[in-house]
Image (cartoon, rainbow, N blue to C red):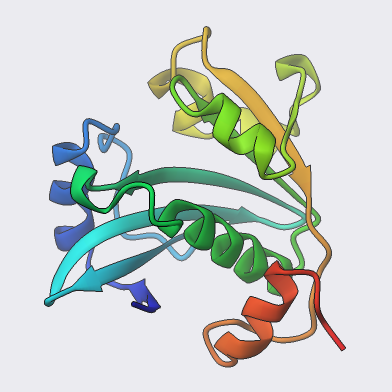
Length: 164
């Protein structure tokens, strides 16, 4: 299984809705990028990232139940972080109501909503879609010098901290 960019919002939105994630604010945008994993031609896992360099908002991480526990979510988050770093992002933020422990294990730290960058506070996720009880987390990512869409091997090495 490999991670691929997803360019069709028409494919992503129903998948996320089926996984009970918010989709009201999803529309084609040069700031929003989705990546996914397919099995047999069908999506089984998705992650999104909104880029506001030097910041980004990780969002819409979903894995269908039959494929959970296989490391797909971990791989997708690493890929999205590498992609963001390649776009000159220094810190990734996210909101979650259900996966705080998962993200803490991936190196995210609790963050104060009051100290969130203005571009993150202005997102629909932050300002209304996610309840105020959502955990707000952040992680610093090191910018890399290659775009993972062009060089996935380098992106994977960057996600694993193994850049030459």
